[in-house]
Length: 437
Image: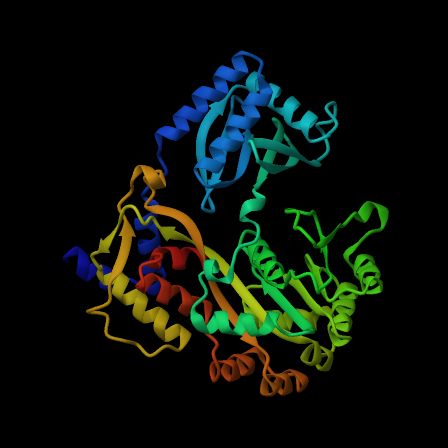
């Protein structure tokens, strides 16, 4: 049987795996990796560990990495960068070389040098240009072969951007603009770790940040310092929790409060009470979708009638890799591509459109994207704004399906739908949508 015909007979799961595997065949490769390795090992030979940290951090930023991972094994240590959400091996170190880096990292981050059997967290700043510095958040983890370390690179220049740069379609952008322009209510941003919630929250704060408003944040930890905003850092060891911090915030006469994460019923009840007494409250939850957030909140113990009265908007999101604009080309559609598109349209309730004239795109790989075909990431979203009909459904303990059905009568675009549309517009690929959503 010809290959194309056999692929048409595959199950939906097999089709998904085939599309994803096709894109995963491309490995991140770049001369920059070898250059970083060479510079780092030269500095290590000279005992110049400050220069080592600078070159690793600047090198990671240069190739659009968010994190640097040091992973210990019995015979060596691997340095890995998370590039556009994907972990990539950059080079290896000996344990003796790694020891020098560990000592410098701990010293710079005010961590205890002589302790390696318990986790530690710290942070240090690094000046990379005359008028620019970055913060690096350091986390250590004791393992069998010593300590793993992960360094999160925090570039404040990328913290707060505009809604135009978040890749919202116009309907979603309109819903979000309406939400942040309200005087009160609760806005929740949901998604797993690494889904871009931080960027969305800071972008909303940036939009709200005017001198006629008092904005207070409770963060764990403070990732970026924002001008004119009062930022508080949670310290649970000393009793400064989200719950106690939020209660204290309400006595500071704020207009806007940002609570980094709602983790328990006490914090949830205080946040909803704040929204009901004239404050705009922004926060996050770890849930899979916008509609699932309602179930999660009710399961935490909040009464549906309070939820319906306090909550205004839920934003669920993920990040997918963007096709590199420097090597973007039209992709020849395969039978599995067509089958997957039609299946995803049916699954999300879209009208199945003819696929003959639809165009798909891919990156062929070039030096600008480390030969991966992808450069940077974009958001895919699902936004529910509560209407009076949706509030009535929630008050009556209605199901998630009922909420979605009513939201579909308005402007709701499901996350997978949003992804399909962005793939058809050439921003990302079908494989990326399948991998992430």
